[in-house]
Image (cartoon, rainbow, N blue to C red):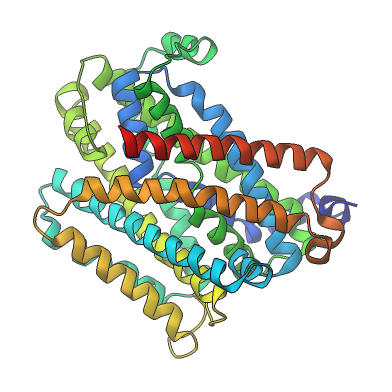
Length: 417
């Protein structure tokens, strides 16, 4: 019997109340997916290929739902984080190598988020030597002083602000008939540049840290088996929000930058380029969206990393714990923020190389994490009667195979081109 079948019959009003209480992990995880790296990827896709990359969002949406549902189910059934389960079921040396590589990767990813903070605030004339330290101190204080429920509410507000990209898209006056044609009959090119972009768009929706954060958030929230059905709805809403934001970023850049032959290298360039094409307001709205996404991810990424590293080595972890109760958790969180900010504040820091190699490491580690998930969720001694059924395994392993192929392609293309 599936978890959903065990949910008690309750009134509609009670269902809504329960869902509102459960709301959070899925939406936050999906929204953070649209971080500085994701926004850059979607912006470049729109600028270079116009609307012709919109079709990639459908398979990305399906993949995201499949993977996040498994995370939610494992967290609810076992009451343990993914890091805990990997540590308990894998060899010590292998676990250490996996988590050491994940720490290095997330350090690079967090650095990229602070690059997004610096770039977005530069559009408003604010120096990175002011914006980066202020944001860094703010997110550090939020984690140190706030409770999980308060921080979750802040994250949900951040998620809503990401919808500013919808405004940017409409200000660009897109051609909806062309968008419809691109979705129904996309122009697919068989060349390295196009394939790289497809891999980048689909790959940016799934990152190793997301799987750990989602499962840890479910546990931190205290969700039980009777909450499963509502947790799945939360996951689906988060996935929809992710794809909607991505859709309108591509549309905004396709309607303006692509139409005028403007090339960009990062999301900040997109915001600046929008000014003469769609007006100053459109440029500022786009930059504000980048700022919100970067601050959001700069907060969540170190939290997620600190969660799973502490879980992996048996240390106390949690935003509801005080510093003296979880010193390793907060020390690691502080370390990641300080190092990431320090790198950004170095004059002429090699940010592009950091971004590229963090993506390469993500690509290398993603298959390892996903295979570990599939093996764990099919162990009856771990999941009992809630292991995957045949259809879920077909979808799950197919997703793993596709993502492994895409990740390896991304690594090869980044290293050898």
